[in-house]
Image (tube, rainbow, N blue to C red):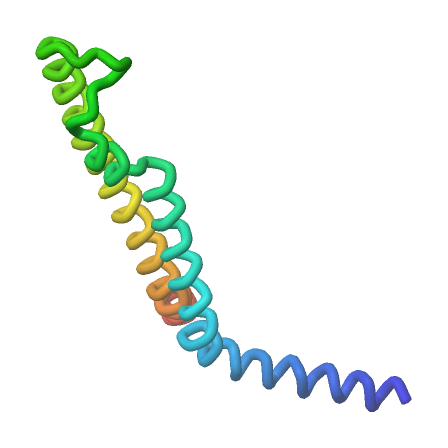
Amino acid sequence: MWLLVFQRMIIEFALDVVYFPLWWYTDGLKRVAVGCWHWIEDGNDHFAPGLWLKNMFVPMFGQYDWQGRLMSLFMRFVNVVGRSVALGIWVVIIALLFLLWVIFPVFVMYMLVRSLVI
């Protein structure tokens, strides 16, 4: 009985090793892409430059005189620029993580072959 179990475990392991690259670049890549998209959406929700842009000309603190409107416009402009830059940096970081997912198996195989060849 234990021989059949051991044989089944060996076969399953061999099939998993063969199936792994296929999974990595199909279903795994799809899952990582969806996860990265959710991270970008979360970053947009966190930084929210569109919300600041939408309220660009609304006076802050209920001050409707020209000094209050000018100060409000300047502060919101600085906020929109800063938050847009931060969101752009976040998108670049997420894109680099996605590329790392794609390149990692190739890099591992390269290093494995390089270490075996003297």
